[in-house]
Length: 228
Picture (tube, rainbow, N blue to C red):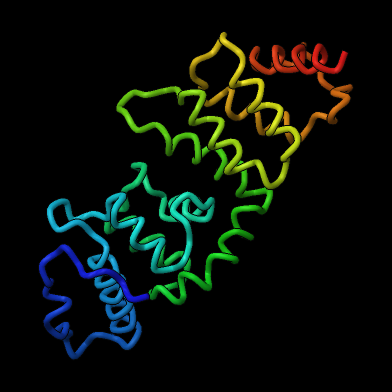
């Protein structure tokens, strides 16, 4: 499916040939052409008023590459772009991310998603991606926490495929407990550590003295009561 018609007015890069000096090297020309292609693709999804890709544009992009906008790979794509605002991509973020992915077309982007998944799931990158997923949900200035409902959805999205049993029970607990209405970054990172380090379902190596977030102490107590 081709990109949707742009909301933006045609730009100079779309309507005219770039003028380069005689001294420009072939490498410089190649870089310029690639940037032009990225800008044309960006403009086909960007909002004409704001000059950025907004949630509607992201949904159109997802449709064109046959990926649901709720798919974890779109969150991975945002991570690769280093997008700062949930649901929005700036031109600079788009350029840097697409160049890092070494893609400049929809077909290449679609083919590059499996490699992006592999990159994210390496031990060196996954913790950074996991932290980014939480920070990406901080949509208000000075916001430090994410509401429980959103955290549950995010846990399932980013950890469900690796730790489904732990995540299912953690989500069940988060939904029924009444002590916390929102989760902070320290608690969020504790969930990942718990999933990676604690034996399950016996929980034998869980030590409450090892500075776990209190919410996880409570979760472990709930699990033990549930078993008994």
